[in-house]
Amino acid sequence: MKVSQDLVSDVAEVLLTEEQIAAKVAELGQRITADYAGHELTLVSVLKGSLPFMADLMRRISLPVRIDLMEVSSYGGNATESSGLVRILKDLSAPIEGRDVLLVEDIIDTGLTLNYLLRYLKGKNPRSIKVCSLLDKPARRLVEFPLDYVGFEIPDAFVVGYGLDFGEVYRNLRFVGVLRPEAYES
Ligand code: 5GP
Image 1: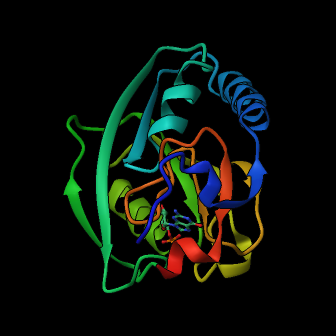
Image 2: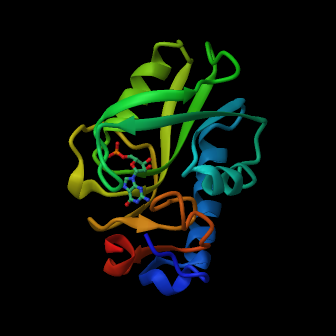
């Protein structure tokens, strides 16, 4: 894999600009603040891809918020395909029993990862659990479930930036874009 020093030259198309993302995150934060008025909320984000979204979203929610982080890896797939077999690399650090939980995700593709996580977290008896994903790729969905908050529906393309990686690189791009084919092939 050959990565350009400036990262941006590996991008064929910008799907979502920094400004579009910021406006959407602010809007989601307002909706969440209104919907959970009078409640304490626990935001659970899934490393590493959701990190920038979580950091920006939590500062747009004007409620008492706790945060927790999980890390999962799917195995048996490849760099651009999820397999649905999920391994927990880092678990929650505090109980969520009786709490209102909002799972903060970067992208829902097949839905297999989220399906696993939702079942796992429901087993910990939260008072409620909802999902907030910045990106949704409905074209490839294999498991259906309600997505309570979605930032953007995007076409069936492998995207990088704003937390999303290819081979662990490109997470620090401030926009979401599609890579040039050369960046995959080399
Ligand atoms: P799912 O289980 O829904 O198929 O996949 C979810 C995970 O796969 C995401 O959390 C993300 O890590 C990865 N993923 C799915 N689509 C993309 C994509 O277009 N770009 C990147 N970088 N990761 C993706």
